[in-house]
Image (tube, rainbow, N blue to C red; front, side):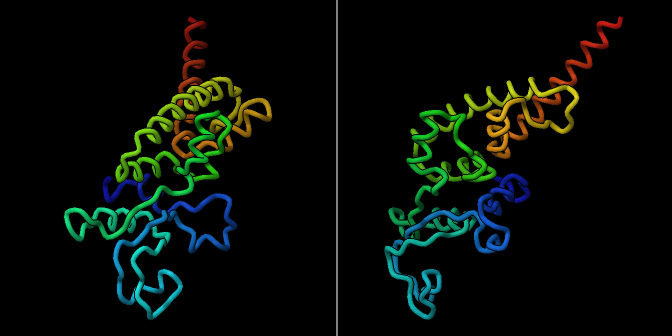
Length: 201
């Protein structure tokens, strides 16, 4: 990950879309962590200012901080914290993706869903989660491509597809899938223009 990687910056600072704007300031992307030792003067992280933070305390930390603490080792066998999977990658979400990837509103889980998953899976050995996400991407990417191609040629900016179900699917796309949609839509539109010019020759 590059310091200047825009996608990484957006993943760090994304706000869960279902939260009202007034609560955004303290609800940046966080992940659940468990501290593996007692730390003095850090009780404020667990609503206990002036006290130590006991070993075993579970705290939600910003993604960027959790990443760095998770790889900081006190000894070759012990890290400062144990990182847990965030709610957006929980077993419930994985089961829903296994059952029907197209029915899951990824944007409500995390706007940069795949970016978050990539960052988290760099720290975990979760082959099953990785397999589920890869299969979900394949299935959803195919559906995104179908919607992009079938979108009316007169629409601008990659608007919605016909049918309420299609519109709902497009609303639930992660940021990565929206980029794919725009790219596929623009390519399809350019192809139609080219074919029209060829017919005139």
